[in-house]
Length: 94
Image 1 (spheres, helix red, strand yellow):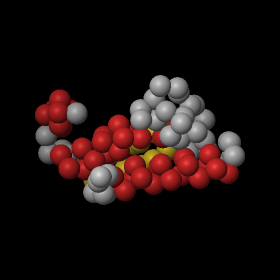
Image 2 (cartoon, helix red, strand yellow):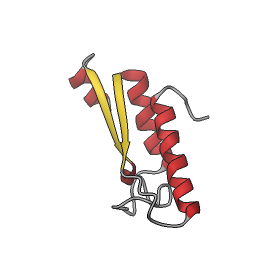
Image 3 (tube, helix red, strand yellow):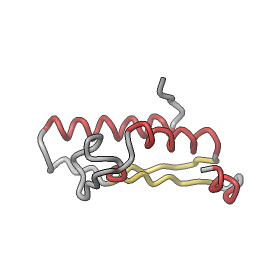
């Protein structure tokens, strides 16, 4: 992350967060689940870091598919996605 910051400097940053980068235990209802993906904490750290250390001007969160899985799995994926967005907006996990 420090290398990316050094390269980008103060240029505006758009964060495109693909929810399927997270492990399916964190976000199961996505079109391309990948076992061994990022943990919830790792994804949140990335969003927090970018918000605190880079010139974040926009963000999108993609790949949530509510037609896959159970309602409980959909709810978990949406909740996780909202948490990533909140971290990118300045909320920190304690």
